[in-house]
Length: 156
Image (cartoon, rainbow, N blue to C red; front, side, top):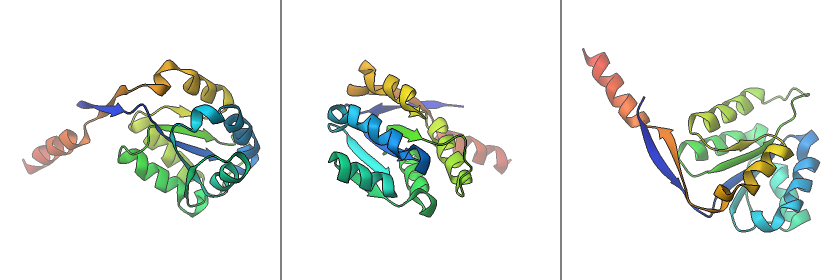
């Protein structure tokens, strides 16, 4: 596999997502880090975005509710290099009707090599890192080269 470098800007594009049982935890975490988050572009699915706007006054770009397509919207943003960080407080103890969407979202985050936090501790590590507020180069798979190679190998 070939790789290419993508520059993450100082002003990050951050998705904030939480399952129903974890929304309160995400709100508490965001309130603790409100000042740091306010200097970045924030996106959130459905209810989570509304809560962040109403209760914390954070400027959040709203997306659809997760089960209604919001998870796929975030996944598309990741695949198009329009999202730099995923803060996703998911509930490991409850099954979700959109579990396949959640798995696909986490898979895309791994494929495109973006930082992911799944709880307050991992989110604390990400936001407190000196790398969070500076330009950062990350390696991502060069799928265009991969597709060209595959096309050549199937032409034979």
